[in-house]
Structures are given as C-alpha cells and as structure tokens.
Image: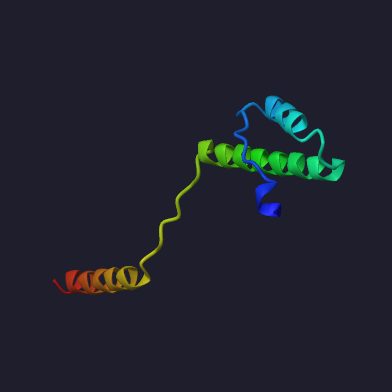
Length: 87
C-alpha cells in the first residue's frame, strides 16, 4: 500500500542537520525523490525566513481617508467663514 510507505519524521530546525536527516532516512529511495524532498525543505525554509524578515521590517499602515467626513467638514468651514464675514 502506498499510504503505508510513508513515515513522518520530525526534522531539526537547523537546515544542515535537516538535510543530513533526509539523506540518512532516504538512502534507499530514488535520487529524484530525495532531491524533491530537499527542494521542498529549501522552499519551506526560505518562505519562513522571508516571513520572519517581513515581520521584523517596520511596515507603514495605510489609513483610509473618509471622503464624506472631509467634504462635510470643508463645507462647514466655508459656512463658518461666511458667517464670520457677516458679523
């Protein structure tokens, strides 16, 4: 059964040690499958590094402009200035 051919193995967080564990546990597998597993590990590791870097980088938060409120305040200011000129 193909479902029973697989075994989950916890890899160390160190990349070099994880590559060694893959080599050790997959020594009898075809080379292309070992290479595929190493590529997957590399891809996941690079993704995690990118996410960590993005989280550390200070990002600017976008603040939406409330156009309706801005327009209302502007018209109030114009009316207030007109009323001040009359006095």
